[in-house]
Length: 285
Image (cartoon, rainbow, N blue to C red; front, side):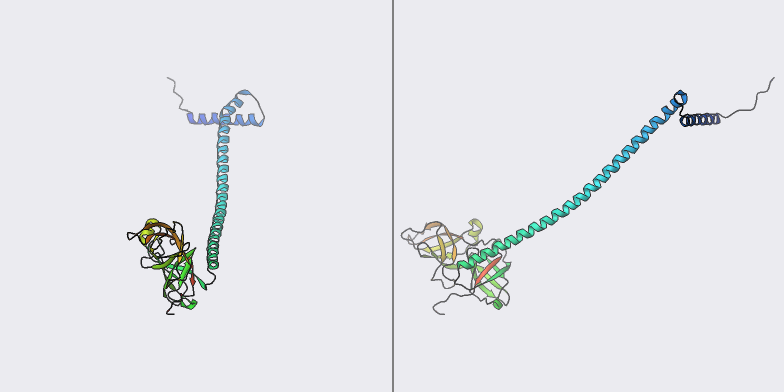
């Protein structure tokens, strides 16, 4: 009986050897520029898809890098544009504020020219009572600026109220719309006298105040007629515009009339006023 050979070559080494031969063959084929043949075909089958995959990955990475760069550029540009927008917005707000202040000063100047015979001092509003209306408020000028109690205050187009309290650098004003105030008025078109009464409730409802004791037997007073301070007033200078008649009715006594007046001043928005430094002269004075 013949003995079997004990020599057994491992399969893995055989596979490694064959792979090495294939690789060497492909390298030789590429190096010597051998076209065709099984080596070149094997190389095409193995390396071409691999090269396409590498190219695809490289192209994807390149596109992503370009997109990231573009995004960074856009973000930087957006940041710069936002900075410019913020700057322009700030400049626009400053311009609007300056224009608003200029309009207020022009309005005060026009009002000053409207009553040239009175000496006045301008003041800023620095505080007010609660609620929507400037029924009572405080200004930043006082006795150091020549302001005294009972001096008249004007703004916008006409009468605001009267000084009720004074400190060295402040003064408190009570407006004609306040429930506690009454003003002797006169219809400028007919010279008929009446009493103007403040009324915060009617201001809240219809933005008007009341008048009463109008004697108009000839029915000459009409809606829209201006009402000014009367020469018989003991507190207010003569001829300052109070407002315009908005409604009128005959009282139950058939002798007098009453109704409402739309104030000439915007008592919801008030920033600057003029204080008339000349006080009303009375018989007692």
